[in-house]
Structure formats: structure tokens, C-alpha cells
Length: 118
Image (cartoon, rainbow, N blue to C red; front, side, top):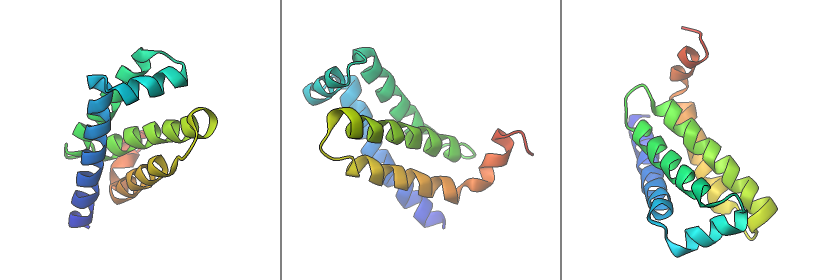
């Protein structure tokens, strides 16, 4: 399972560093996407920061579940944005969300302390 979790974390890292970096760098497509969403460019920056922080947490021992949950929650928002506002396809966001869910499953033993159950 160790190599599977490392592979999944590496895939998520590549995807979210790319996407988060593009948001923070102000890539024209990202700016246009967040204009369409209508919450303002501050939300683009927030999403980019959340994605980068989530990736960092994936690589900190004992915090992988937090990183995967943060990135997964971001993908839930992305899927909803595609379904209700942006259109054409939410498949990439769904795929990344499923990868996040797999990492959550692998590191599920880390969850109880976060719920107050040691």
C-alpha cells in the first residue's frame, strides 16, 4: 500500500500544483473561469492557496488525511461549479476527487484523532 499511496500522492501533487499555481499566477483561463463563477478573483486566490496547502499536507506524515480531505472538498466544489455554472464536463474534477477519496481510505487510521476519538 505504501507505493500505491505514494503514486496517488504524486499524481495529486502534479495536478494540484499545476492547477493551484495557475490560479495564483493569474493564468488567463483561470481568471475567466472565476469571472464566470461570479464570486470574484479573491476566490481564485483562495482556491489556489487551498490547493497548494492540500498538496503540502499530503507529504507531511500524519497529515495526509487532512490534505486529501481538503483537496477532495475542493473537488466537490469544482464538480458543483461545473454542473451548475460552468458546464461542459466535470469528469476531471470527479476523477481527482476519487483519487483524493482513495488517499483518504488508505490513511483512514489518521481520522479518529481529528474526530476527538483517540
